[in-house]
Length: 499
Image (tube, rainbow, N blue to C red; front, top):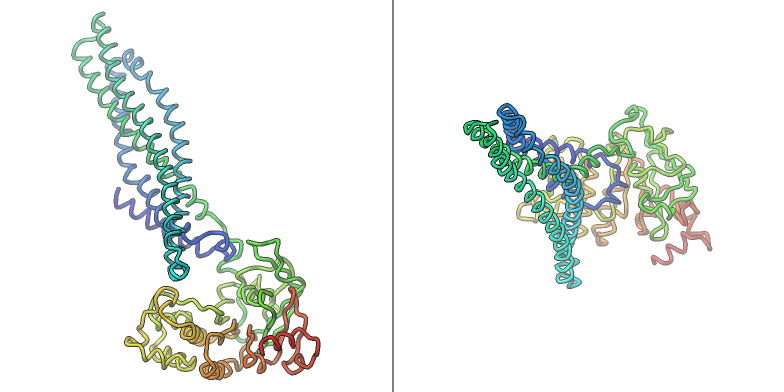
């Protein structure tokens, strides 16, 4: 049973993790990471234990109680009926207790999830906590959360004590009832000493079994309380499809992108519109730069192209096909991205670069070194003692911003995408490295559809088209020189601010 329990927990965790990774990004905007981690670890373990290891004790106690009650009726139906009259009140108490414990366990697991979330945020952002000197504040907040869990545990302890006290008392009452009623029956010659002795043994056996059943029932209710949240996550259907839809023919795939009358607001903030009647056409094999004030929604354009979200209305098309009809996994396999704040995994530099490939295990060391050199990352990587095997730390914390940016560029280069999305890809580089990386990106852009979000003039001036995003729509569009010649244009004001 213990082995079966481990198998069930493993399967639960794998199924839950699979279900979580298939959910749409909006789900993660609303649900905290620490809570999900607690579901994966604590809730699955509690549920697995309650329906396996605990189940064997429950089955044994149930079998013993059934056989014992049967033998009691066989020896003396009259005495058995009298003795077992104590069971109905205990059953009613058990139902009330079970429902209370199930709700209490659910609340306790939620509280534990909040505690885990707080710890995960504080430890994950330890540099920020240390920089602001908020260690004591975070300790106090965590202690408060733990104290709340303790209060709930105390409630559970009192409930268990009352229930087990009542069931233990009922077991003793059964034995005492046998002695009392059996003595009366013996006195009236309705029972022999041998029958009373055997009946007493069965009654004692049933009393012990009731104690075992009480423990089983209590653990089962705790498991069901923890399982409620798991079933919600396991059965939740993602609002966006995961791996289904149309796949375009490789030969006819050009990479032409078009936004048409798009309206969008983030699901977590539906009252704050980002785009209102947003339209933008990006021809295949062209470079389009998107500029605009901070917070105007430039990075949101990339999220919509990757289909992390769907627009409220309007269409986004790829080669004339609405991307809502396309397979999202296939779509993202054709798009390479370098974000403003690239996130690396806590593994080696080589593994982080190879992550961009469809099959990372098939990527050779020569391929990794080649794209690293093109991204101007090879030199600083080779200066590390372990070279490409250097572990970058959690989220790449052991590297500088410019180093992380170049590794992210190398990761996108290895993917060799048809569509390239660059979100301030050179923002963390100094002037010399920016020139070298920009030169490499210029070579990479040939024959690809490229959308660049940028503020730097060096990135913008070489684009085929510059589009200005303001107040949820494209207000100006043209080449850099054309837009700069407009005396009252938004683009000119942006460039003046930059200079």
